Image 1 (cartoon, rainbow, N blue to C red):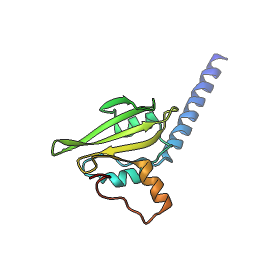
Image 2 (image 1 turned 120 degrees about the vertical axis):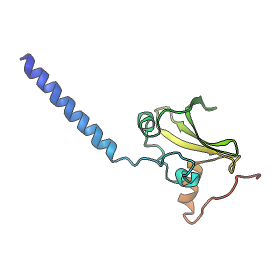
Image 3 (image 1 turned 90 degrees about the vertical axis):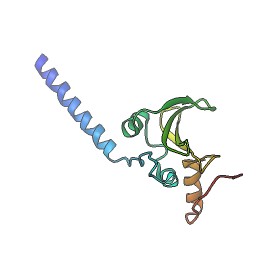
Image 4 (image 1 turned 30 degrees about the vertical axis):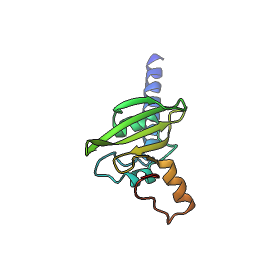
Length: 138
């Protein structure tokens, strides 16, 4: 009787693992943060609301810093490259349930920063609109 239970638990574990892996394979992964990647493209295509902390950690690796954002949510900071002594900074903004809900970017060219939510919202309203250049006040 005990051997039957062990076989049942092992079979159930294998089945649940296969289901979890199949579910993860369907998710689109974001571009890798890199000095060679176009920040605007990363922000336009980052899948908001679908990636959880574990998936982000597996894809991007551990953050350079963990933050508590002004709204109390968690943020992970990634510093990439070094142009004129200033790195490209990406901050992932997590919701209370641990999903990425925005990505902030700041660099030498975008001193005021910009975000994935900003790009994706404006693209949805006017698809022909392409935001380029420095932020306001530059």
